Length: 234
Image (tube, rainbow, N blue to C red; front, side, top):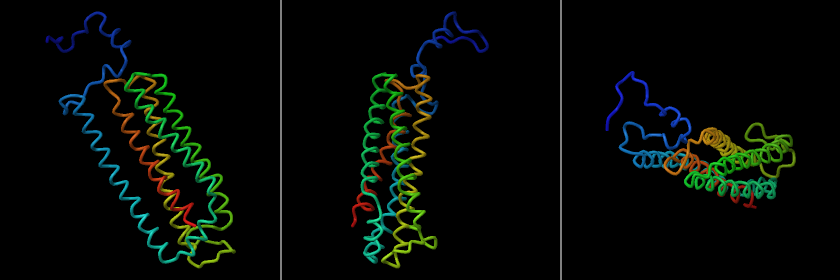
């Protein structure tokens, strides 16, 4: 295969063709990979390793939850009764919908359905906003105002257990770190949306969307554990 000498202009019509050709067709594998398949496998393996460390992070919270619940069951029952099961269930449904739409976005990229790729990414982001709105406006704000706070900030006058501040500590740490992951996931998905507007993803290049989808699925799975442990324990 011949190439043009360095510094020479491209062949007539080449630049116009590159401007009309989708970006995903022009995307090449990084120089240290043999091809796109090797690059995709390496990126996916790296993401799975990262998700493993995230599981270890939440595992510490679950261990603390189990130990304190065994030691102070009355505090856990009292704290759990203060949570609105309806709000927790609504957020569970929202995240399950978002799992479907982010999976659909990956499939859209694989099938080159550019319009639906962008739509499903936006729906997933909107679900994240809805989740956070319910969490902060309907759950965190009223509880904090009532004095149901963690540790030394606890000031709820009708508590039935001296160890209830421990419950609220676990509750705010677990759901707060999870909410932070939701915000990060929304940022990643919005970045994918901006790239999708430039037609950066297609049948032969959809690594970014799939990696973002894996992270979002982790957010959903963690909530599937948090919901029954926190809201249904009583």
